[in-house]
Every structure is written in C-alpha cells, then in structure tokens.
Amino acid sequence: MTDLAVVCDFDGTATVHDIGDEISKHFCGADYLALQKKLFAEGKLTTRAIIQSIYTPIRAPEAQVVAFALQAAKLRPGFLDLVAAARDRGAPFFLASGGLRQYVEAVIAAQLPPDLGRHVQVRANEAVFSADGLRVTYPGEEESRAAGCEVCGSCKRVAVAEARRGGAKYVIGIGDGFADRCLMQFADRTFAREGSFLHRYCQQHQLPCVLFTDLYGAADAVRAYRGTDQRA
Image (cartoon, rainbow, N blue to C red; front, side):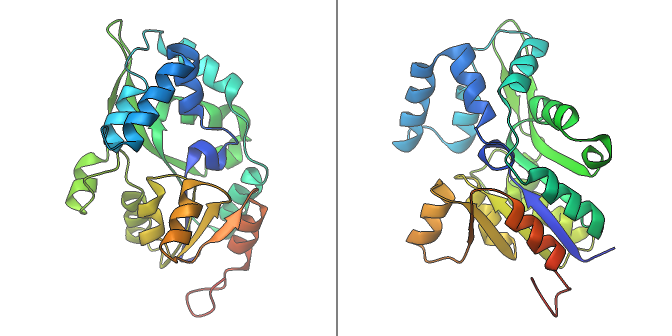
C-alpha cells in the first residue's frame, strides 16, 4: 500500500474528446451545444446549469445514449498505463467527472481489462432519463457545498477529500477543464492538458502544473513516487 492517490478527470483527459459534448452534439445539434457554451462563457449559465442544459432536450433512452458514447469514446494514450501504475502501487484511482456516471462506467467497462476496471472508482453526476428530457442530479453536491464549492456539479475537491480520508497524503490530480480548478487547488501535484482551459488558467495565475498530451508521464510520476519525504 502507499499514501499516494490519483484523481483524474474523464472527458477530454482520460478520453481524447469530451464525450458529454459529443452526446449533446449528436442528440441536440452542434448549434445548440455552441449556444450553451456561449451562454456559459458570458456568465449567463453556471457550471451546474450548463451541465444540465447541454442534455435537457435529449429524449432518447439510456441504452441509446450509452451506445453512442461507446462509439464516440477513445481513451487517451497512456490512460491504461496510468491506471495500471496506480493499481500496482496500491494507490486508489478516482475517476472524478462532471459528466454522467452511466456513460463513464460504460466506457470503463468496455475499454479497460477487468482487473484495471475494478481499480477505478467513478465519481460523477447521474442522468435521469425520461420522455420529458434528460435530467441531471449531483450526488456529491451536498458535500461540495459543505466544503465551500458553490460552482461545480461534481467538485473534484470531494474526490480529493475522500482520497485523504482513505489515507492519501499525496494526491496527483489530472485534468483539463473549468471544474479542474478545484483539483488544482486541492491536489499536491497537477497535470494539465496542454492547450486546455486548465493550462491557460495555470498560466494566468502563475500556478505550477505539468503539461501533458498523453498520460504516460503521469503514469511515470505514479511509479516514481517514494513517499511524502521523497516526492515524485
């Protein structure tokens, strides 16, 4: 066992493309998704509101949405290596996502060998499918608000806190988006996808991060960690 843990974003980090966006474009239209992102950029939608709005018009059943996600999902090079490195070190691996649990779990089950899939702990939002449209619920919202986050739908600080309650003294965070600002704040070392929102945020605020395009470097950091007295 180790006092290390990994908290990794899913859409655009563990995967090459943002699967939530791909779902919205496919079922709601590219123009609709672009409008929601514009409203968010203008401050007219909160993070929780855009998580809901990009899915609201979807009336397709869960099986159809998940089937499309499985077709659209391509894991980022190095992701399997990263999970394997965490498993081999006995380091908990949290896949913390502002996306929907149903498609995240389906992709992990389909694209990871069973022994690696069992090591991944998914923390994500929940989709409620109906003929009236898709509704999103936030299982971690109460703890997020209690921890001081009024913004994220599925705050990464909750996953970091869970890792620390389990004994982690050093948390490696990996992300790319707006909600990963909380991951940057609470992890001990952060990897940011090159060219992403998180990369630009770190530049603007002069925050240290390790840039990535693949996840092999993050896997190497997991393997190289030697404890809080000799950090990776």
